[in-house]
Image (spheres, rainbow, N blue to C red):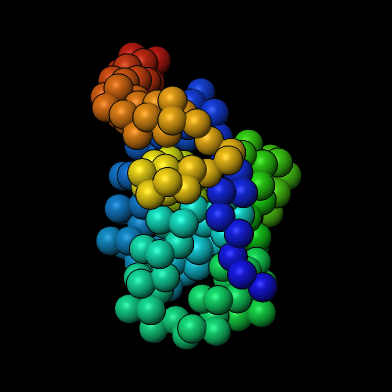
Length: 196
């Protein structure tokens, strides 16, 4: 079975929120990597799982190359990109299933499922898993817009998107990322003021 691309197309409003969540998660994932809370192969399995659910052609290409460098086999990568859990290490199963659920629910996961992730991995590792998911979600949406634009320029437009949508996502980051940073600063200042 071949991987299906452009399975989910997110609205500009959804992209804005998902990008905000991703920007807010960068520090969490960076610290988790530094502290060894999440291995690179586990992180790549998360990236591939989310990419499979969303169907991002650009992210699929990129994360396959990274997964290969991390020592994942062609069979494992192919299985991940076709939605199979055959090659997922048992200790990563709940995290991978949560990643798929998160993407399937368009970034609005069931709180009970999140509680199972925290119960399985502890708060810090669960936060690292969630951060990786949020970052690839934003990457997928952006990558799908880039891929669709590339296909459009080749004379093969993606039926699920429009030129306006593709441009909105591609250039929207120029507005949404700075707004996300400002929003995060205000939230941090609000928390400090509340605790003072």
